[in-house]
Length: 246
Ligand code: IPE
Ligand code: IPE
Ligand code: MG
Image 1: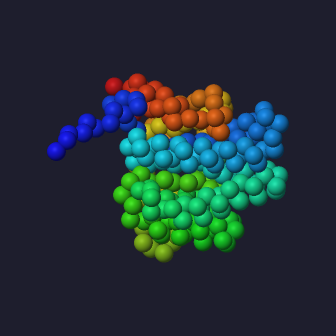
Image 2 (image 1 turned 90 degrees about the horizontal axis):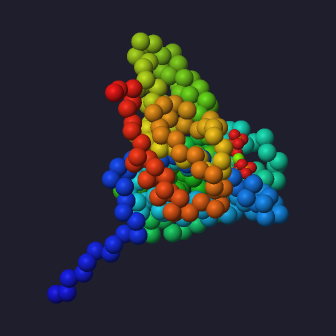
Image 3 (image 1 turned 90 degrees about the vertical axis):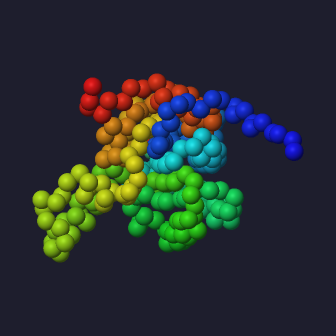
């Protein structure tokens, strides 16, 4: 029987991998503008980058990936741009439902989904349903997500628990709050990437990012390549995380 060597990976994965990565997928509009294209074209390319990078994270052995797709503040944009983003989301959902069998990714949606179109919410529900038993990477897609909104809804639900006598105010601690976040049961992000050259969180994972390592990259999201993700992983591996200790 012939012996086959295991294929050498294209890069040596770093010894320390983040368990959970967050990505602020930013820079689509500027990418389009640079090319004289409408902003929606940038979102189209950005959606393609998202597909490629999500698969690459799974290949690298990342257990959780949270991507910021649409914020609670993005409703301020022109209606035409919002429609284009929602149409891309719809296309992605239909496509992922059609070929979900080929991926070992469990998809979840985080954010306040209530204001979204009914058909999109239904597609999201189906995508969560059909991938529920997957054992590979958990992919959280943040849509109409805002860190402050998430904390406010957690407070509201906790207040309801107290009001209905299921919880005492003394029991409201960090763990209780965590259990009411959209990411309940998942580890906090270890690494948060922001391409596009902006140095801010823009309301992403406020509660969960207390000890996340940030990597900012001067690359517009549609130009972001698997090699850029690898560079961020290498940078993460060089960080010294102390969590307040010594
Ligand atoms: C990120 O790209 C996508 C969304 C916010 C939906 P932008 O649209 O913010 O692109 P820039 O930052 O204007 O270049
Ligand atoms: C953050 O990017 C939201 C997403 C990438 C979905 P924005 O482009 O909305 O953030 P600001 O306005 O530059 O802070
Ligand atoms: Mg932006």
